[in-house]
Image (cartoon, rainbow, N blue to C red; front, side, top):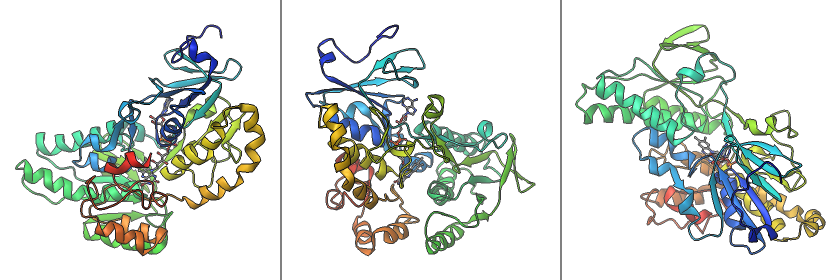
Length: 413
Ligand SMILES: Cc1cc2nc3c(=O)[nH]c(=O)nc-3n(C[C@H](O)[C@H](O)[C@H](O)COP(=O)(O)OP(=O)(O)OC[C@H]3O[C@@H](n4cnc5c(N)ncnc54)[C@H](O)[C@@H]3O)c2cc1C
């Protein structure tokens, strides 16, 4: 190794297989938890954040919920485990030297590399959105939106003319469901004269929740209308400026535009010459190997259910772990074909929506569609889904859902 400082390994550790996991999200954390405390490995988890982000509750963090409800410190998740946690932004892969270098120039050596970097926001090149819109893809973004809402209502005593949410996927509709109540709550609490607020939900496709069955879309549509949310389906956003949004050629005045409509694969892979599919995902074999000794998991990998948390967790568990626990890389090569049944397991885990849907907007219909009445009934019985002491037993259906509540997430890992 030349010209690279080595982080995370002592001299004694150099005799062990060095596993570097990049990305402290669902896939990376699951793989790290499974591989830590194994005498044959030295495991380092490199992530740009000190926390695991629990995405489904971010809309709640933006609308009054605590920030702590959407993040879990990695130190807490790995307490007592034999693993090095490093914070840094992976930028460059050197295949020959077997290093990952961070944007501040630190190099991390590996024998085996596992990458699970998640996706990034995609504005599809629409002018102004990156500058003027709000997002809810991280606790920081959710916090920024919340601060903006408070500033308008509490400091300026003035609600926006229109609150515009773009994207009627799960995140957009959850936010649209929570926002009217939250705005009224802030006004009441801070003595702002109550006013009617306009919340617009815009979707380029002809129906909301386009990836879910159409009767689910209809139910959610009715519910949102009852909440006073105006739906604009089949409408394309063209640009945004500081004061307005242009939709299908028409201007809409707003200082609060929230973009939930698009994500794309992490640029790390393109920048480092991985083989990508047409939709920009990394080509992997059935065992999630992109190249020799380089595994790619979760949202980054081109697998049938990539894009769901459950898939990332399953990737970090069933796909990788049996292989890694063989310890001898040569032995791994011979065992790969015997792991076919793992694929079937993954296909079973389609994932589900999660988070605290206290108005029952999404979770009910979606879960019923996915898992039938029995699982739905379990949710109905759970009086306080966020209460870790609630009646729900996460182990009972651990294989049917990725998480039932924030309070139970640790049990899933
Ligand atoms: C708002 C929202 C709601 C969602 N709701 C659901 C749901 O209800 N059900 C469901 O199944 N799925 C849901 N998802 C999708 C789910 O969260 C993802 O599929 C899952 O997180 C993918 O796991 P991952 O490990 O691939 O990526 P992530 O969990 O995103 O983890 C990627 C990690 O890599 C880190 N990272 C990024 N860049 C770098 C870098 N350069 N160097 C080092 N570290 C880096 C990130 O900080 C992050 O910790 C939701 C997603 C969002 C955004």
